[in-house]
Length: 471
Image (cartoon, rainbow, N blue to C red; front, top):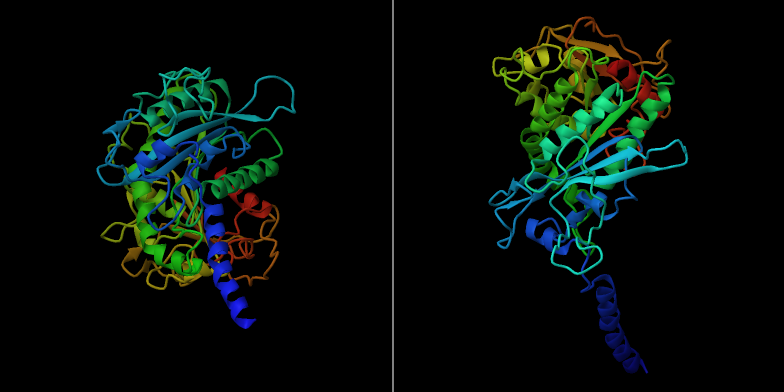
């Protein structure tokens, strides 16, 4: 009897394994197989599903902004041997590189019916099912709606994606009195779906906090391939994979800043300049907001800006513009030049820089090899020593404060951890860089995230702080 049972087990186990594997795999094509394969944005050799970085194309009505604006999808493409030299007017890198593969527009539907939801259309995409020879009633087999012409080219064929975005922004700024353009970039281990949730949380809380008509933002959310993820059959713990990816993703964040965010920011500045002709309404403010490696990417983008771009007559930042770096996963030295002076891109106060650090953030404090901006130890050395230098860095233009619950601000509710109050001897007034101990409001374990309070930036009290810094 025991022998028969043993034989049965030997038969059942391979059958169960076979059924499990075949049930989880399929030979059916998915929506965008061919272009995904050509660009190398389907699956990685180690099993990671790279489609999570263009999921807004695969589920266009399910994943959307709740505020008017754009999703700019950046992917690290690896062109196949079958890929053409260029797609939709964009030259492909020979091996790999970070490229804008799609731009999705979100706007309110016309009409007075308040129950009408936001609608979306695709302004630009390198991923589509174009098949003009098909006899189908829908010859292009579109998975999503293309944006109709509005103050710019009708189609993205042969058009630079940032030129398309710039032209649309000019039309947007002329037709709507937007108070702010907010470019947001999230950090490590944030796919496109999570990034959309985070964009909506920040913009939604800011709108709730501003009860009047003074805050009417246009959102530009930039998503990028910020994580390593092995296949579902991997036996390697996720924590190990994430730890090993740190250096790689830090480098990727800097490359995204240099190759994508810097020209994107310039396109937005150009659109604002075109719109802000004499006689125009109040100029729209530009806010660059980054979290963690997203802050690192924005710092990288800013350091690429040359003096020529900021010269008179060029599209440039205003003193009312802001650079918000929340729990920055970058070293303080990135703000300074080789001589230890604050870089001109940050020293001129246009845009004015705001940074936060929190004692409850265990993610940046784990990077013991560097002085990361989001780490409270860095804040203490810069702000609580009353020194004029931090190593070889001249920190006299860095102002410091504690973000604490005091009228009229009343942010920092100490929801999870009571944080001690400690004064800082370096005032904020007139400083181009403002550095805050934000332990009073960044002090909870954000659900579904790690790193202590590293990602605790999506609550209403943080919006109170941000609204003060944005205005």
